[in-house]
Length: 234
Image (cartoon, rainbow, N blue to C red):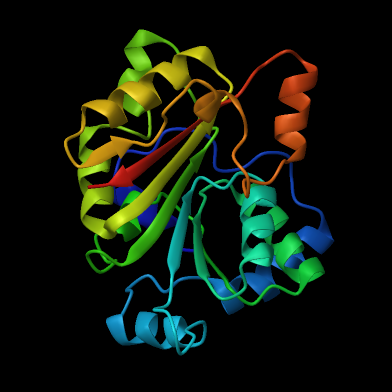
């Protein structure tokens, strides 16, 4: 990883938690270079990687998860859909190590990691190259004075609208009341996205194909009810 990347933009949040064990550091040193996205994302590199996951009937799918945390959700959807290529962005080092462990234990070949702020890589992705974007349980930054630090805002939605194919999906979830409100409000008011919910059950119940994780289970046990939002690129 290159620490100087973060100096290009204002970053909020933690980059490290508890110190890494020797085994964790070894995993970071040896496995991350194998799956890390290049700092300069060459279009030929991207097309070559996509071609490895392309069938004869359908175009290759590229899926992005912004802020994958410990990587449990990303690893689960990548394991369930091996024909798709998944990019995960996460600046928290301990989370990167956790995803690397999932990749190793599950033998996954279809995940690439960007171990830094996602905003540094978005402008390098080709327009209309994504079939789906996940924003799962982002940091809510609940205080009003910190609202500018929230990951989903008009500028981010403009970027995602350009990167998603027509009818591509923006999938979001949160169990924090303030985060639920701003995720929904920001996406609803953006002209490029249409909310797919037709009844309350569409956002109250976890949709089929969205894997349950330990974080979600912990939230439910503590009385935090998640909401699930799926938007379609117009």
